[in-house]
Image 1 (cartoon, one colour):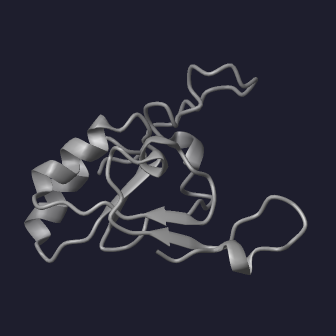
Image 2 (cartoon, helix red, strand yellow):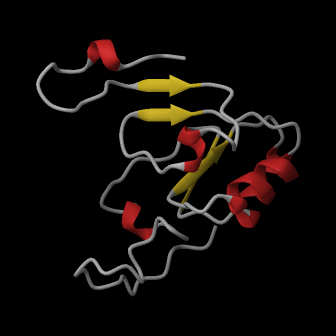
Length: 126
């Protein structure tokens, strides 16, 4: 675990970059959507388990897979239900071409009373 509390400013509610390894689906930081510089790593034995865990999670802004197998990576990007997919890189950050609001499932702004007009653009095929 890399604890970011010591690198955060003292005024306000801030957390520096943090990394939590060996996260399991029973843990709060797996079950809750965290917006901040926090990376949770869940390790699995098979690509099918990775897809199942990602698809069973109620949130879907993004996910990433790290693998040496190009076929597994290619299949993962088609099978996983997430707005952003990283292959051997952390989840890509928000940019003018990648909007986090284009997530899926409970991470999406569509259907939530936000006062925002839902996006009518279609994500590029993966």
